[in-house]
Length: 478
Image (cartoon, rainbow, N blue to C red):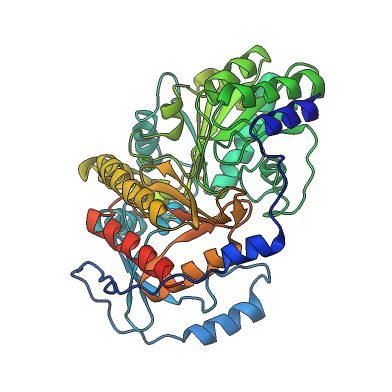
């Protein structure tokens, strides 16, 4: 039944038409682009020079990594970068060369690399005490929990601290199962929720992770406005969740977990109307709604502090990590007092989740976001950057889609806009060329053809101009 529904949707969008011949595609893909006579973009000035680096070279480090570290470790570039220093939105290599970091905001930093206020909070607490969180009282964890709860709506005010986003999502799913007495969890195809067995099962992408099968996990159609079968009709995608519950479970579920904007999946904003419709379905089935804010949270979207707020829904559980500690290993699960009570029926503790040093850093991050108005900056600079990237789409046929919100933006490259053929090789080429010109961006998406632009929230308008100018210059010469 579901298969025929999708087929009808495909026909209605005229996606089942005959494909072009290989020669037609090749002719279009390999037509030479004109050489550009535009000047080479110049990086904005920045008043900092790192001290001389005297450590091992990139080649020596790479050799040790290959010998002693996991063989599954990935590198973004043909020549991996040896990053030895950082300040705010910039990174420096072993030779002192400066790079604009347009990706590190999603990976580690929120306020900027080595923000003095965050560094000071970490050093002050480290000089006094670093200890477990379960044996004695300490004000750092309580103060941060209070400040974090104040940023969340309604009754979301009980905080469980963890060491990572993976651990936070594992705990959230366990809480949902214990609270409801059900085992079934619904997640989205193309989602990413972490590296442990349970979160790998919820991730549903064997291309990115091992194909770890988890009992009771059901994967719904991805509400992708660009590549999805129903376009931007969120309610049609939501019907698939109802079908999964009706035909794949007893009619009751533990919960539904979703990102508001899929990060690793290629900066995909969920189709309008999707989350409210799914929320009603989940509630009728007795389940809890888990909002994964590991990447979209902490003011990154600009318009809101949390990604789910843009959809007009309030989750039962919120998970967070990455930017929460500006690079410190820290994560959190926030829920209501009623739901949190379920863990008192079990023995649950976390030895280092919420330790004094990490929570001191987290509290400093919240204060910096407020003091420096970083949410407003993410909205202003992010909107400007998206406008410039959209204009670039009109100039370069290889750009198929520009999407995202605030300083969480995606640029999808295709070799054919009509067929949406992923431009995987071209994506790697542009990334390498932009790195050589001083701009670092991320990569993601199911096909690995989406630029993930997620800089620290202190990114400026001048930085945005430099990034777009470098991308434009690189594509013009490709």
